[in-house]
Length: 396
Image (tube, rainbow, N blue to C red; front, side, top):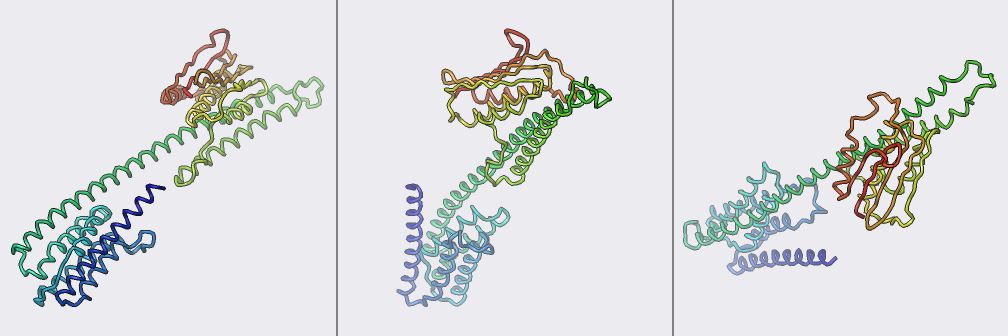
């Protein structure tokens, strides 16, 4: 609030100074008996171009129009006074206006217009002595031209510096948006790979159950009741719905980056509960062990990384250890760290096609994500029995 107040005060002081110098020009013209309407018209056009509020500025009032028209009006005033041999006055008000327009031309005009508009403003300012001195080579006019060139150099250099900062900021924003979209695309891959792998595993299970069903549907020895397939088919439907929902949200973000980030696929500690609940097949049991002392306000990036660890580990269980019957997910908070563990009792047997087993890049990307947060990732066989263990430790 204080910064906004200071900016408002500075803007008000600048406007007041500009209007005060314009009044000095009019006072000088009145003192020598020169008609006031001519300098008043030139100053009105220039001050209006400089001070027109951006929020109320029409679309046709482009920076090049704002800077070129007042300069042309000033040049027309100078040429008329020179041709008619009228000793027309010039003063600090018009000079200040033209310097402000020079600043706008250098900083805000499109590149192909910037130099032309800036040159027009400079010429208009440096030729104002011709209204009174008739020759730019005279002593007074030469002194004005020297001071004018110094002011032009300072204003143009400052405006060019600010324009370079604007350009670098634009490039930085574009790079950030591109990196964020790549991260969103990576998240989409993780979500869809997880759900599609689940669809594949449960579809194989449904096919196996259908293949082992006796031909006679009324055979009392049939160990597979038709209702046995319902949980499997429900899991397939749920995984497909979640995959489509993730893709729809992510594509929405990629198409319209200006919307809120809450359309991005969610991933936090609360989502881990849903992830483990919907993961297990009828032959598997998933247990979530969450430390009651685990804070709920951990940094979002840590929660998202923990979610990705669990998601990738569970996806790898489906891909490489479909024979696992027990999967344990642990969330523990100790010594200012969050520890995430995923353990299974599988022997590495899987019936997934080779194309569906992944290329080994999931853990590489996961390790980069964990390391970027100052954490540590360990993957390997379970130290006390069969199965595999994924363990990540984050500073929290």
